[in-house]
Length: 167
Image 1 (cartoon, rainbow, N blue to C red):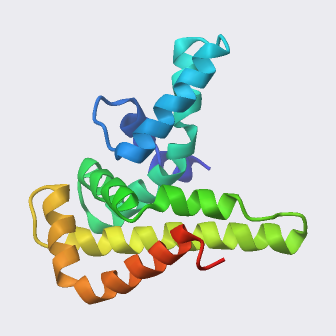
Image 2 (image 1 turned 90 degrees about the horizontal axis):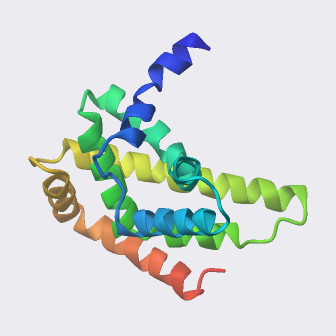
C-alpha cells in the first residue's frame, strides 16, 4: 500500500496547485458541480474537493504516464486534458453513462467501454508527448498533423456516436 500511495502522491499536488490542467469542458463541469454544492450549503473547501473528485481518476493516468515517459507532470496533464477536450471525451463518457445498466452484463459493458476510452486517451497522450513541441499545444498539434488519416477516421466515428448514429 505504501508503494502505491507514494507512486500516486503527486496527484495531491496536481489537484491543489494553481496550475489549471483541465480543459474548458472539464473546468466548466467542475464549476457547475461547485455551484450545486454551494447552493446546498456545503462549505467552500469541501465543495471544491467534491467538484474535483471526478477529475482525480484521470490524474492516476497522468501520473503513471508521466512516470513512464519521464516527462513533467504538468506537461503530461496539459496534453492529456487537451486531447480530452479536442476529442470530446466528456460527451462520449456521458453517452456511455446514459446506457442501460439493468443487468450485470450491461453494467460490465459500460465499465469496459469507459476503460477503453481512458486507455485510448492515455495511448494518444503518450504518442503526442513523443511528438516535437515545447508546449502541450505544440505536442498535440504536431501529433495530429502526423496522424491526420487515422485521426480523421476516429473523429468520424466519434461524430457518428455524438449524433446518435452508433447506438
